[in-house]
Length: 226
Length: 221
Image 1: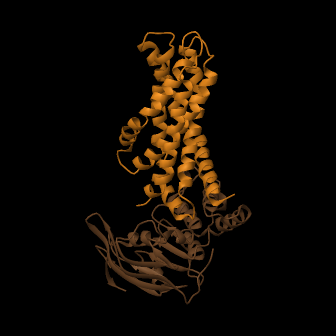
Image 2 (image 1 turned 180 degrees about the vertical axis):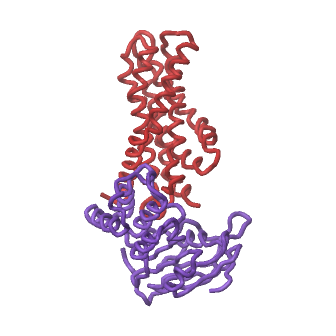
Image 3 (image 1 turned 135 degrees about the vertical axis):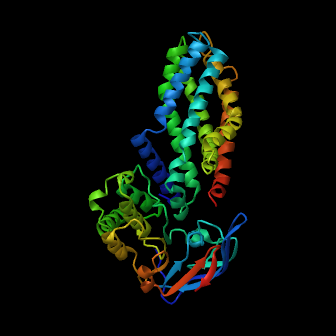
């Protein structure tokens, strides 16, 4: 295994082990998402949603739930000296970016494994669209993981990190949310899933992922400098 | 990790400066250390002692002057120096939710120490630091003194050629100080830069003493 891959695996394993022990991020994200679904259900006074409204409720909820995890992504590195430890080690620092993005991607997948069925239970008449929705979730999660890791690594150095992270992340994630909602809309349509424009929106999501993964790879080393 | 020859000039610092915005933390620091030597850095709070260590550790970029450490020009060749420095700062650089042993494994992996060798070395260090019985406890559950013992183990785990020690005895009891002396004491195979408020403790081991005053100016070397 190359030093970079080993560092990536080491940091990722450390993060997942810490989260499994402390459950600091995932339960809060899941509770937030379920509570938001309850609010939408009673706020909209609807027992079923479809099409663009269903896609909007799903992606707005997932995005805000993701922010809870993103805010905490680098807290241990900041407060317990992990940044210094990694900067002192003879490793490529982009391994930290890749490991943190992979950890966030894993949190988002775990979150969705729980909350998407809850969403279907609350709002959908049919679960037929959930199969192809997996592709949208995977691509959107990858983009959120890339931008979230990048923004979190910058915001964590500020005392106002809980404010700064969402303020920078939300505008950056607008294209991702539009594309994810656009791809989800025909899948959640009344009367069963359709595929109109589905491929195009997936391509937009893939492009977004590529851009922010490349940006993260290019600038992360610089962000770790004093 | 490659060591250094006792005769080799290990650190050469000339007119080193470091600013935090408008405030100058280090102002024209000069010294040279050969392999196997120890430099003791003394000075009041805010004199720039920790800043000096962080510059030498490549954690801060110098604002001016020249610094050559183990043959690497800083900050240009900082990447070549990483992994050859053992840094013990105010923070132990240990994750509170992991056990002491897990933390040391984490650092061993980052430094590319082969797994079998890492386990052997971690076992030895934990025994030398008197931490065998608490190795599986989470760091967050340990006292400050025990965390300091673990931090010392972390600092020397990868057998660095240069030790940068900021108040290494802080939080340690008498037994801890004795155990620490065995782990980070003078050794011909490495050089040490020690920051301390206790000159009596470290001056006998130091070949050179650097006194800084507020603002990072050198009072005497």
